[in-house]
Image 1 (cartoon, helix red, strand yellow):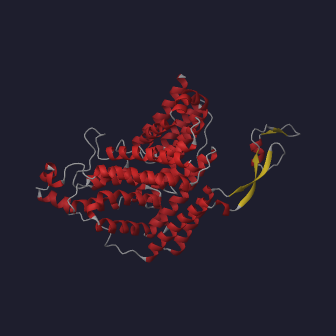
Image 2: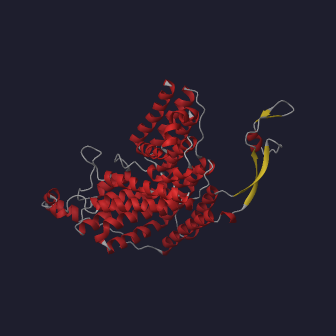
Image 3: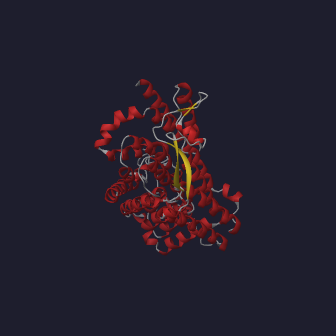
Length: 480
């Protein structure tokens, strides 16, 4: 037991140190923990989530190329036009805008251009910027569990299917999308009157008495409306959205997908001994394309959705390069592609480290947590939330913790119902979108408090998580 606790501390220590450095460090420092577990303690290494990683690479490449074409500028411009047309509703419309942008592109890092615009609109309307900005930053991350190409959703579907819960991407979105919308609207309604109005805020009024400070606060005028968007950029958006629709249609109508034959090991088959005395497992025989009755068999399978997503996203990327004037060089230097590749490394390292630990202690975990989990299945939501606070990645939470949850006997519908709980990294305000939002708010009303946890994102985040998880759980129990 002491050895197990020591190894768990190594895992947690690697995640904690990685989260302090952020970015690539999350994955890289996980490698130190993995090295200690494998070489110092002799643990069998787990399996990295290669299928999920391939999908992220394909999706991020497609989104990055769309951004390089100028398509992202057009989407931001559309959002800005809508927000400026209804400035008095900015606290409701701002989080909806950032949420939908993330749903479309699969990453929350696309909203940085929109944040200073939200702040500018609020200031010019006399609305306390903290109200729309705080919940809009939350919404930009919430959209990840509602995007058909986001790592968290794809990983949930892939891992669930491998564990006997036959769920598709549209079915996940059918639960997560309305639940997250309701959670965000609850957070937005709370934010509608939070804090003092600017004309009644003594600290803000003191600031604008200084002419230079007043010019700094009111003189920004951030906008994208003066940017001319070429038709090629709009065409890239159409290609990207078309690719998403194709993926969703294939997920709904999987009967139209092509079928192919493959050789698989028969479950529970013993090792096979060749005449020369060589021994091979059934899995090794299947990998070598060898059919031996009782050990391996030929089965017919439909093309899997993880492959469909990869093929469609890569093809869409090529179309945008060939016909929409998208520069590959510009794509790899853009924030969407770079943040996506950082997510790949983080998920790779974190998930491999977690799987190594949990796969070696599966029996012990089942013995320790089995009774609690069997009585209170929903309590896994608390675990997901706490892990997310630590590792700052919803995809990594799903990839690293979902296999453990299934091994503990938690039903798939319950896990789908608590999917919104994988977003908890607003709790400690060190995530880039939150820090950027604080800096974009020139009024100084969006803040990280003196005591760290009393920040502008805490209450909207907790309201959203609570409402969204309860709604998703209810919907999942109703439909599944």
